[in-house]
Image (cartoon, rainbow, N blue to C red):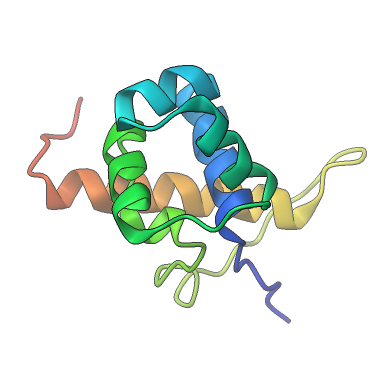
Length: 115
């Protein structure tokens, strides 16, 4: 059975912030939003608009589909992994999908691969 990896927008945004190594304040400034607005979106107390998600995807250098919480790649990706300790398979799969989405995004932007 394949785990459901559909994330909510707040979950996807929190993960993208973490991976980008940006604070909410930094990401909000780069996206032209207030930190308070971004905080409400991340906590789920406010729904993000499409223009806000687009600005955040550009500020965080991630595809819009990643922030929307639904990944078309997730439907095609199967993962076989060994875990240690308390590592959660869903978390590992989510991280792997994030990097595959980023790779697809960079390919779409014609960013050359490093060697």
